[in-house]
Length: 313
Image (cartoon, rainbow, N blue to C red; front, side):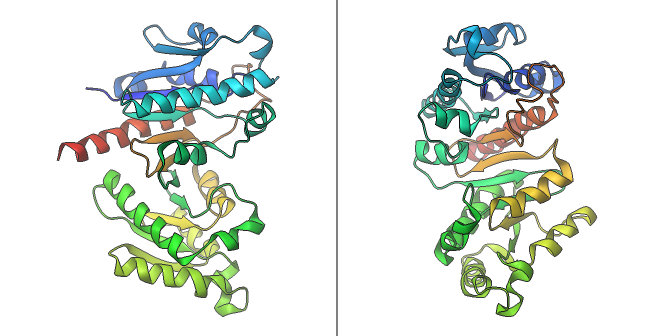
C-alpha cells in the first residue's frame, strides 16, 4: 500500500501551490504515494483529478494574488500546517511534506514564527534535528534558526551528545545501518588549537568522545571548509553535523539545490520540505521549478517506507 503523505500548500501568494500541483502531476510521484493536500478551497482547481484536498481556508481573490502577501494569507498558511499536524497526530498520515511558508507573513499576521522545524518539535513534544538530505551530501544542524551571535551560547556538550545520538538513531533507520558522522567545528579551522576560539576543544571535542563511548560513529571536530570540499570527490561520511544554519546549508545548496530535501528527524512520522522559499518574485508566472517539491515528496515516501518496515519488525 502506498504511504499517505500529507502536504501543506504553503504561502497562498507564493510558489507553493504551483509547485505542489506540478509535482502531483508527475507519474513517479503518483506511483510512490497517496497525497492528501491541506490548503485553500480555491486550490481544488489547481490539483490533478482524484487528489484529496482538505480545504482549511476559503480566502477571497484578494488574498490569493501571486507575489502579494496579506495578513489573511499569512494566517492561512499557518493553519494549513496546523491542520497537517493534527492529521498526523490522529494517525491519518504516514508522512508530512510542507511547501514553503513566509515567516514574515505569518509573524505579521500576529503569530510569531521561527520555522516548521521548531513548530513541529513543539507540536509533537520531541527533540528534533534538521537534516538537509542531498544526493551528494547530508548535513544535520546542531542549531537551526538562530542569530550567529547566539550560536556559541546554544552549543553545549550535553546538547551535542543528544543530537549525535538522535542523528545516529533516526538516520540509521532510513539507511539500514548506523551512520558515520563527521562533526564540524564552530570556529575557523576548528579553533586552530585555541588560537581562533576555545569552543571546539572545550565543548565539541568532548561531545564527540562521549558520543563515541555511547556507540555513535562520530568523528571530529573538523574544519568545515576542508570537510565540505571533499563532497565533490565523494564524501567519506554518511552525514555531517554542522554547528549553525549557514555553515551547513551553503554547502548542500551549492552542491545540489534542486534535489536536496529538508528532513525533520526525531518526529513520530517523517517530515520533508523542498529547500527553497516562497519566491514571490516569480509566483504566478508558471516558471517555478517543481523538481525540489518532487524530491521532497519522493523522499517522504522513502522515509515512510523505512518507518513502516521498522514498525513491522
